[in-house]
Amino acid sequence: MATPAPRTAASETGDPLLLTPGPLTTAKSVKEVMVHDWGSRDATFLRINREVLEGLPKVVNGEGDYVTVPMQGSGTFAVEAMLTTFVPPKGKCLVLINGAYGHRAKKILDIAGRKTVVYETAEDTPPDLAKVEAILKRTPSITHVFAVHCETTSGILNPVHEIGELAQRYGKTYLVDSMSAFGALPLDVRRAHVAAVAASSNKCIEGVPGLGFVVARKADLAATEGNATTLVLDLHDQWRNFEKTGQYRFTPPIHVIVSFHQALTEFWAEGGQPGRGGRYAANCRTLVEGMRALGFETLLPDDLQAPIIVTFHMPTDRRFVFQSFYDKLKDRGFVIYPGKLTVADSFRIGCIGRLNTDHMNQALDAVREVLAELGVASASPKKAA
Ligand SMILES: *Cc1c(COP(=O)(O)O)cnc(C)c1O
Image (cartoon, rainbow, N blue to C red):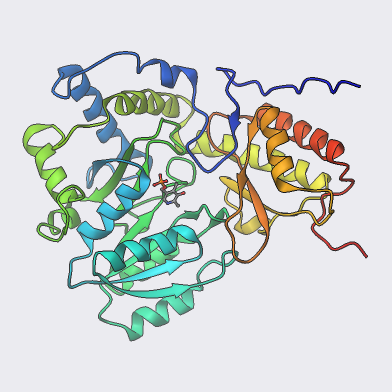
């Protein structure tokens, strides 16, 4: 008997929907604006770029005191630029780790020869604020504190505002990786005393990949001159050049920036962070309820789960083979993501990008079909009795 052709997901372009941590499904309108060529000194491009840079501090309540410094490349380029421009060669950074992106920050600082103090908790555990305070109290040589907003490894929400309060109380400069949260989860850089926060074009603002950026408090950025130990990732130099000429030092990803401008226009039209975050929260609720109804269990309790990406435990039924599950979902037009946890065997499904609850329900229908095809009656991760 012939198997029926799999239904494919309703994306605008016929491409599979990306239920991943990024790059993400973007609107067709965001891709369409790229079908032109502009020189890097073209007046239209320079205006578009200026509007992008001026708009980003508003997303995190940083208007006036904060400035955006873009950095060509993926998000990690912005994180490395932020860390190696802000933490001087003689500085020492407290790195809060509960997943791969915290480890990556530590690695960046190690390679750059910056001293670190690490406070690591398990991937399903936010830092204990009393312990953070104890470390700051007993280690006066710490100059900077680094935290990840939503640790995309698990999808856990870290207490970035509370950590910022502590950094402020002990006179430390506070640096945040808000890559997977910027524009979706509330972040108030004034209230959290953030000196600099890094993010990128291709996550919750729903642009295409290619541009990282750092929103930095001007007073702190001005004090970083001479800290950088690379030419390309020197945020201070990049900033000064913009102030002087309005231009990038090196070739900008022009099409990405023009597309990012369109994505930001659509972001504001959706109601900014509350609107975008509201859609993602609805996606997350739909996904988690639907998956739990099939027996799946989330790694995180609901109060630690950010509505960005959800980690599910691997079912224990022997007929559940992750690669087949993954491939059959892909055939139906949904790309999910493997886990990279050390605490549990898991996989991840994202709620971000140009997706709504209809898409999430279609994904759940596909999951239900695939489980039936695999002969998996329950997706529970509990060992059968
Ligand atoms: C996506 C992401 C990054 C950057 O990853 P790139 O692959 O370099 O774009 C950094 N931190 C977090 C928390 C992320 O989710």
